[in-house]
Image 1 (tube, rainbow, N blue to C red):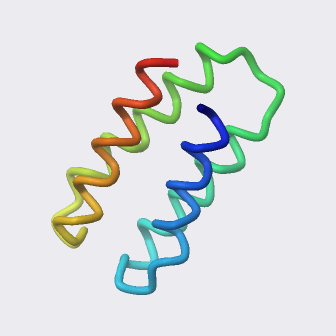
Image 2: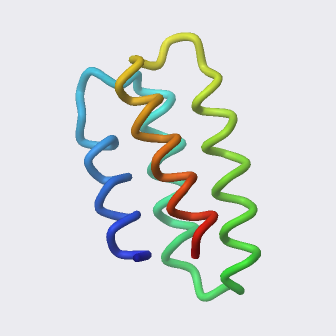
Length: 77
């Protein structure tokens, strides 16, 4: 499931229609997910950043939907 989440985040990161500041935060999330920290710590920090990203006014609507789906997957880990 974690690999699927990473793949979804990489798809958003590689989407050039997504603003640069959001892609930078997605890149930060990918680094956090690769860390050897406790899964619960990673989940909380990733969800916090994704929540912040999803509230950005410049984010495309379809990307916001993708982020909500990713948050749902993370919560089910």
